[in-house]
Amino acid sequence: MRRASYELLDDGTFFGTIPGFQGLWANGDTLETCRLELRSVFEDWLLLALREGDDLPTLDGICLNLAQTA
Image (tube, rainbow, N blue to C red; front, side):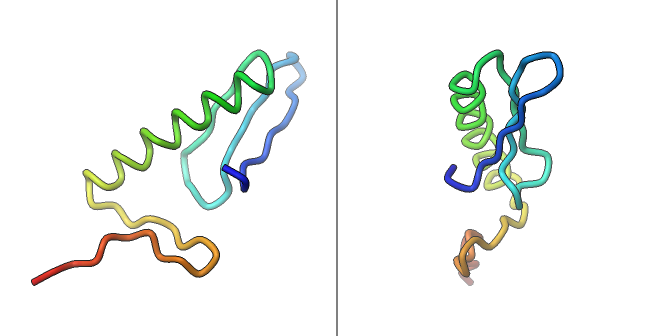
């Protein structure tokens, strides 16, 4: 979440993303609402990616993918 970036849109709402996480975004009427929504969306995104076996991004040199066992 510390990588999240937020933008104030022309309509007065906030838009948030986390770089490196494709398709992950949220918006809200206030910055705090946007932050809370982004956290929730991130949790859902991560759970879905793990369930589907999708590749996860590497952050700060840390691979987030599960190790395959034989």
